[in-house]
Image 1: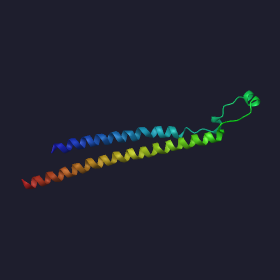
Image 2: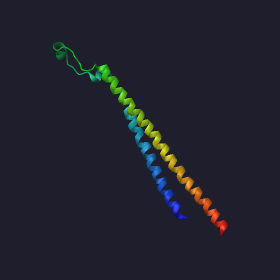
Image 3: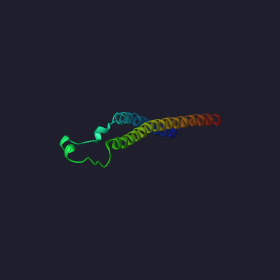
Image 4: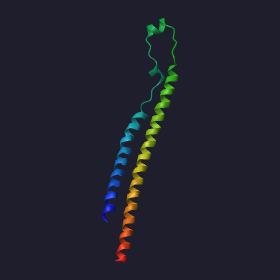
Amino acid sequence: MTGFQVVTAIVRKEAAKWDEFANEIGPVRDAIASMRLEPLAFFVLDAITFATIPLKLPAPPEELARSYEDMRSFVERLLGEAQAEFAEIAGALVKIAETYEQAEAVIELDLEQVY
C-alpha cells in the first residue's frame, strides 16, 4: 500500500520544517534576551541644554525603560513559547506519520490473512 507511504513522507517533511523553525527561532529569542537597556539609554540631553532649559520630559527615562523592558520581555517570552510549540508540532507530526505506518502494517496483515 504505497499510498500511505507517500502521505507519511509528506507529513515527515512537514515535521522537519517545524523542527527547523524551532531551531531558527532560538537565536532570535537569545538576541532579544540580550537587548536590555538602562534608563540612561532613554535620556538624551547635552549639558548646555540642561543648564538653560527647564527639564519637562513627557515621560521620565525610568518609565520609558520600564515600558521598553515590559515589551522586550514579552517578545522574548513569546519567542520562547513559539520555539517550544514549533518543536511540539514537529513531534505531533512525527507521531501522526508513525500512526499511519502502524495502521498500514495492521491492514496489510489483515489482508494477508484474508487471502
